[in-house]
Length: 312
Image (cartoon, rainbow, N blue to C red; front, side, top):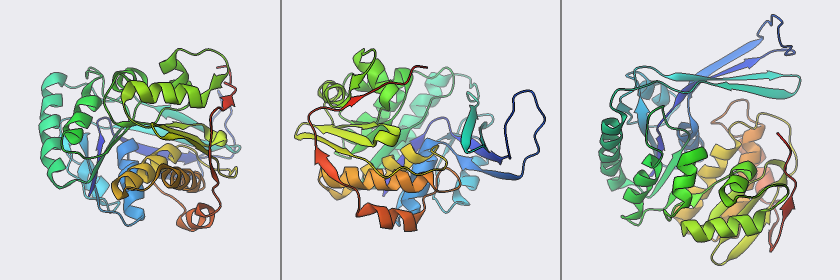
């Protein structure tokens, strides 16, 4: 069983409109609403792949029921007064996202300790752990790393898909696989301008004592490990990229649990993330597309890959 932890889950709302013009009124053609958050999306993808999984983390009183409606077993710690919402607006072939920060809780340190004890109990039957997404306001940034250490102590592989300060803490040595995107990787290694992704990911892997998978959007992914580095890329597809990283995390933890070699893991992650882009909402993948693309992904050893950063 693969356990996923989402400390700051959400109700994902997707709007589809014909066009999006700031300052104008818009009629929404289609609305989709479901339980979400990065770890929930990972568990959903694993479930669709036929893997045994369970979603946990922090939530309000009704959130676990909403997750189980998706077919995913859930064991959330009831600790949040309400659920945040994430809004994705699809218009003109583009996706605009608005993410709420999350509910404020009293005594976040006490809640974090309760979550650690809760996760430790669930790890008894787990073969892999994914901790992903943001933290609610007020929580210490080392919480994901502490959760990862619980699994590492039991020889359970861990994937951390984090950002900002929690990612920096994890990068300073936690022995869990990290999944930074291009901007996150550049910040972690203190790089400006164009970035040699292989060199940066290898440096980060040395710091964290674990493989690093750099997600690069249309430029694919790079996996840096102590045994070498590899690059893979899928054909460009149009759609919603919101859940692509979550699908990649699902593929990576599945490969680690199975003990697959890294080139196989990387090919699977690239194909599955592309299949998530063409799915209508985050937390889903187009399984037919995944099966078609899986055998077409070429993985090659690589020593250097210069990627141009887009100014923000």
